[in-house]
Amino acid sequence: MKALLLNKVYVINVLGYIAYDFVLGAYSYWGPRAGYNIYHMTDADLVFGGIGMVCGIVGTLAGGFALDFMNNSNTLSNAFQLLSVTTLFGAAFCFGAFLCGNVNAFLALLSIGELIIFATQGPVNYVCLHCVEPSLRPLSMAMLTVAIHLFGDLPSSPLVGLLLDRTNNWRTTSLILTTILFPAAGIWFIGIFVHSVDRFEDDSENQVCTIPLLQEKTEETSTSNAQSQEC
Image (cartoon, rainbow, N blue to C red; front, side):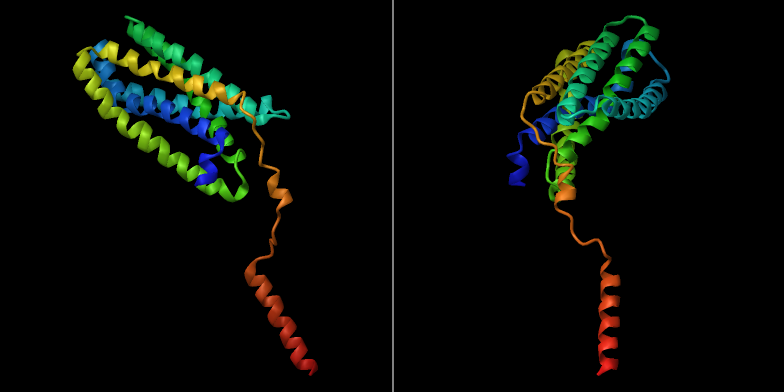
């Protein structure tokens, strides 16, 4: 655990993802309600769910392909570049969507914004796995999952509800929520300039025996039997 907390690249990646997931968690809960109250959408649940599903699949695949295309000697830096740029532009489109008075323009901009935002899924997990030693990869993924839920989507819905009670305005609340994506982009932008070492090649430097234990035991037994017969 201490090794993860002292890893600047890992901490920056997790902090950016927490802010990112804070917004997406609130979107998933309050988004349909905002669509109904702002744009009087009778099928808001279906529309928001469909947009999230399609954009999630396409955006995630696009983000992975984009990172592969950018691949060079410093892949962690490239991942942070992709994270910051996609989050920034995605946030801009989502922010513009909630400024629109026309429902069709809103849906178009929101779809583009979410498509771009979901491109972060590949790079954020890439950084999480490549910035730590192989032995820490399971723990790094586990702590990432715990952190984004504990500090991200878990508190976001009730906090946005409290904000809505204060503003009593769905559009204003949605715009304030969306602005949190900009700090997320800023956090990931900092990661570009932090010294990083890709630990992926550590696997080949610290190889262990890959012979299955059962096979080893069988070979030992066969050897023992052969020696007994010779005696």
